[in-house]
Length: 504
Image 1 (cartoon, rainbow, N blue to C red):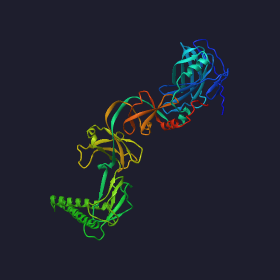
Image 2 (tube, rainbow, N blue to C red; image 1 turned 135 degrees about the horizontal axis):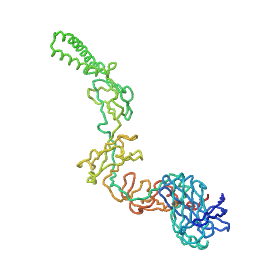
Image 3 (tube, rainbow, N blue to C red; image 1 turned 90 degrees about the horizontal axis):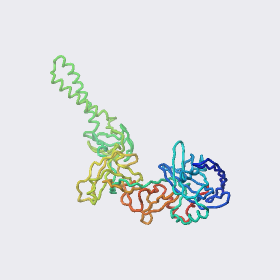
Image 4 (tube, rainbow, N blue to C red; image 1 turned 180 degrees about the vertical axis):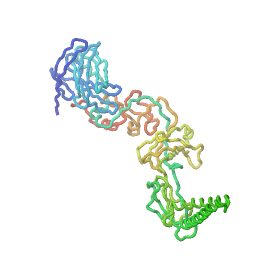
């Protein structure tokens, strides 16, 4: 649908007596017609400040004729448009010139303004943006003001057309998009290996039987089940069997306790009368206290003729070694529990990397069931051990880290591990998600202008799971697309690329 936008433009002349002019402008698609009903091609420029990007489209500057500017302003922090603010456009040569301001965008992120150049030659085109006291300034040097439209058209026709993939700002603003400016940095040599998550030795507890008897579960106990401190898990009942079952143990300790308690009370009455010696009294007292400890310990877990087994801490069940009704002996393992606080990361390192093991500093790892990448340093990790020699029966050398267990990490699961070792200076590294692949070749998209993206082939040297060290195709200062690259890839593959012009 055709949209008409009428701009009433006051022009302020800098460095001379202030004057004002007014001109009505009809904006439609890529072409602007002024009062002379002339049409022109478009130029575009892209400039970056510390916090913002200016992508501006405008018609060639011709003396005495109106040129309109469609300025797209983007926040670099999130690649979203500025929703409000004031934009001032100035055209300056030899400290003299003209300027024009607009107090709000014509539409989200797009500011419309216009200027009528007064003299030919090279100028500076300056855009000054202000919002809530924050200011951004963009300067474009060597902007030519032409004597006639014919000369402007001729000059623009000689400019080689860009082969970049075109992707409109309005589409970028609507998607999850991010760009990283390349800067050489420190990276690390990385060894990519497989491994697994194991319970930490001091985090795992074996619960054993304290008596002989038959196993009876208080409820269903399965591997991986969460249990709470003090919760009843199972009981051991001796029934009528002979031996050291809980009932006989309890009755024996109770009788012994009550007998020694009576003797102790009698000794306390006789001692003040010197009817027994101090030595005899201390012997009786010691026997009584020992019997009390044994009886109290049995009483604590004895209930209705059985020995109650309870959880000693909050944990989850690692394994169950017995079945309902099974007979167990004293000291026999019943189940194992894990506190779920610390775990071991075990990396299996091939022997070809044995000489690099002593340089390992930390590791990134990702479980086989998740795309989440964890770092040992962020989990209070510690390299606790690595093999000092190889095993004839294995071609791998183990490396162990002990780490805090994050939510969602399951002991026993297999993981992909990136062992991080010695430092590499002045490397070019980019986020893993920047990289596209096609027929075995890898490439990225580099932002050359606000809406222009160049496909560049790269070679992957190393990856730490989060970032990839690359060679070829990239240089300091290049702006690599790190989010949204796939959408640009689709645009590059379509026969009808998105139109370069805008209909606002």
